[in-house]
Image 1 (cartoon, rainbow, N blue to C red):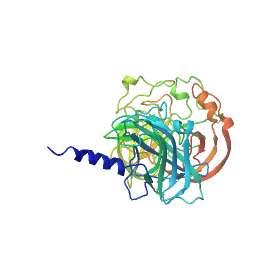
Image 2: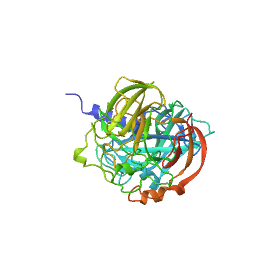
Image 3: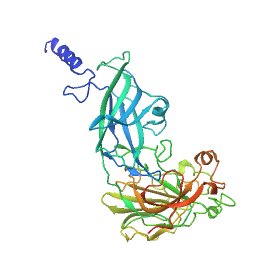
Image 4: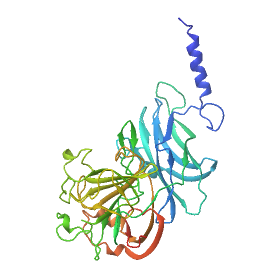
Length: 400
């Protein structure tokens, strides 16, 4: 049996070496709260607000018996820690904190062995120098030593979770044609249904719909629906042609599901992985980029698996199939051919016109999509290589 003092000595050495300090030093550092980026890189893109958007997530895990209470998370230029790019604290910090079950965190404390997602979004001026790498300075109250018993929390701060920045994003055409298209549930509010919904599948945490948009169309009077809202045919966008955003190969389709009755979501008991997106099309655009179109009209899909498509080609018609409460086109790009177990990636639409903004507060307070949203329209302005943001009104008639 080995001498008793050897394991005691080893434990003492651990306590001496792993005291909190600067992570840029050559010494080991005890980090009770660990963090890593959910994605391998962040891809900044230019939005219609003229700014560069950085949208990604950190995975935070408390490996210490003492609970960790977050106080502040800062985003830094990894090459120069004096360059502060974004800061989150107080109510703003809590707003960005999510559980792994895709719900809002109730408070900023992470229990022993607990994990949270921290949703990050910040912007820089479009002309600003873009860092090649980011890092994250985290301040919290937590355990100061690797003790197996909970102790009085102490204030800790260190910089971790480096993340590469990639300026490469896909440039695509429009998925629709015509005027008055509203970018519903678009980027980048952390409370948005697409942005905030993560899924644990295939052994990881995925946010496939991070940059998804639900496109609905206004008529000449500014209405998304007229007449009985329970009739799919009364929605302006119903039956609109769906277009290929780029050349590619069709790798999956579904064309057999009936439309849902608008006004409410279908019974959750009837929703499966196979039918959640309704009739759909997935296209391999090459270079590890896949386009996904969902909720298409039954029998309208004009392509089949293996078909080669060209940009601008009509693929199907807009419907109301799957997990949807009103006719719309759900569109997003992702980094693998898995609709739910992939990572959503940003993109730029090469040509379109920005024609206004549906009032966010009024739209959120509406019980449905009924109403006149014409007052949100403005004189169209030509845009190039931008991603429409939430509730933008977009004209695709100027697509080249």
